[in-house]
Amino acid sequence: MFWAKVYPAVISAFIVLNLGTVLFMNRPAPVMQATDDLLGKLSPLAAYRFSYTGWLTAEYAHKSGLDNRWQMFGRQSRFNWYFLIKAKTDAGTTVLPLPRQSPRTFWQKTFFDYKEAKFHLNLYGNRFLREAYASYLCRKYSVPGQPHIQSIIYELHYQNLLSPADAAKYGRHTELESYTQTWDEFPCSQ
Amino acid sequence: MFRISLGVLITMAYFCLAPNWNAYYSDNGVGGPYIDSWSIFYFTKGVIPLDLFWWIAVAASLGFTLGYKTRVCTIVLYILEVSMIHSNRMIVNGEDFTCRMLLFYSCFTDLGRALSLDAWLKAKKKIPVSNDPSAWPVAWPIRLMQINFALIYVISLPNKIVDDHAWLTGDAIYLSIVSNMWSRWPWPGIFYGGMLSKIMTYMTVLAEGTFPVLVWFNKTKMYSIALLASLHIGIAIMLQNVTFFTLSMVASLCMFIPGKMLRGWMDKVFHQGFSELLVKEAPVQENTQRGPKAKPGRGRKGRRRR
Image (tube, rainbow over all chains, first blue to last red):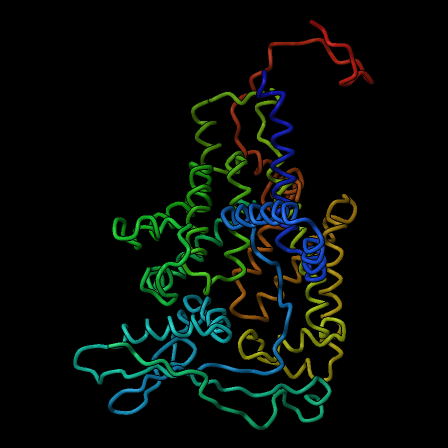
C-alpha cells in the first residue's frame, strides 16, 4: 500500500532527474558562463552547495550514460586532411599498414573500419591519445627479426576546400596546392 | 519494431567490431591503459578474457533482437555499452551514445511484450495475460525515451547554427559531401554552385527543427517521422563512417509509431491477420474482482468508499 502511494512520486522524480540531467549536461555556453558568474556572487557555503549539486548531477550523468553533449555535424571542416602514420626504423621510414592508409578489402573498408575515421578525428586534437596510439603501434609492430622501430611519426596532409561558387567556377572542390607537415614524432620506449 | 530494428543494428555493430575488439577495448589497446574504472572490462581485467565479452555481447544482442529473456539481454547490452565507452572514449561514435541512452531507458520497460520469443513462449505455455491495467507494461520509460530522443534535436540544432554559420548560409551539406573523411558520394559536382546544398541544408534544419514539436500531434506525427527518416537514410547513403549512428536514429523513430498502425501495415503488406499470428497472446484472464464503477466527474476528489 505504501509503495502504491509512493510509486508515482518516485517515477516522476526519476523522470525529472533524467531529463534535468540531460539538459544540465547540455547547457549552452552562455548559460554556463552566467552560472559561473552567479556562483562568484554567492557566499562560499552557498556556492559550494550549488557546485556540489552540479558535481553530483554530472557524476550521475557519467555513470548512467546521459553525459553526452549532442552535436550532429555541428562544425564542418574547411579542409580535407588525413594522417599518414609512419614508423622510423634503422632501415629508414616506412608507412605502417593501418586502416585509411593501406589497401583494404571491401569488407574491411565497408564494415570493419567504421570507427577509424572518428578515431583519427580524435587523434587530430589530442596529443595524449597520439602518444598512447604510438606506444601501441610500437608494441604491435616491433617484431623479432624485423628492423627495430625507433619512433612513430604522424604526418599531416591537408588541402583547403573551395567555396561552392569557386567549385562551380573551377570544376573542383579542392585547391591545387596540398600541404604536408610532421604533426608529431614519438620515440618508442626501450 | 523498435526493439527488433535496434537489435539488428547492435548485432551488426558487434560483428563489425570483431576484428578490432581487443585492439579497441583491451588495457594495452589503441587507447592506452584503462583510465576510467566504470567499466566491467576494468573490474574483470586479468580474470575474464576480453574476447568472452564479445561472445556475451553477440548472444545478448541476438536475444534482444529475437525477444528472448529480453530484460536480461537489455541490461547486459547496457552494461557492455557503458563499459565500451568508458574503457576507450576515443573511438566512441554517435551510435554508441545513442544506443547507450536507449538501452538505459529500455532497462525499465518490457520490450519483449510483443513480436518476441518471450511472448510466443508465454502463449505456448498458455500463461494467461491479465486484463488488469496494473499488470500492463509501464509506458513511462518509452515516453522518457521519446522525450530524450526529441531533446537530441532540441539541443543539437541551436548548437549547429551557433557553432558553424554554414548551417545558415546553406553550405553545410556541400562541406559534408566534399569531405574526404565523411563523404562516399561519388558525384560531388552536383553540389558545386551551392543551390542544391542550400536546399538540402535548409530541409535538414526544417526536419530537425520541426520534429520535436510536430511528432506529438497525431495529424503531423507521421509526416515528421517520414521527413526525419528520409534525412537519416539520406545521410546513410551519402556519408560514410556514420552509418550505424544514422541508422540507430532511424530505428529510434520506430518508438514513435503507434502499435496499432504498425499492425495495420503488416496486415496490408502480408495478409490480413498476419499481425495476429505474430502477436499471439494467451487468452485474457478476466479481472473477476469488480469494484464499484467510478461515477463520471468524481475522480480523485470523489469520496472514498471503505
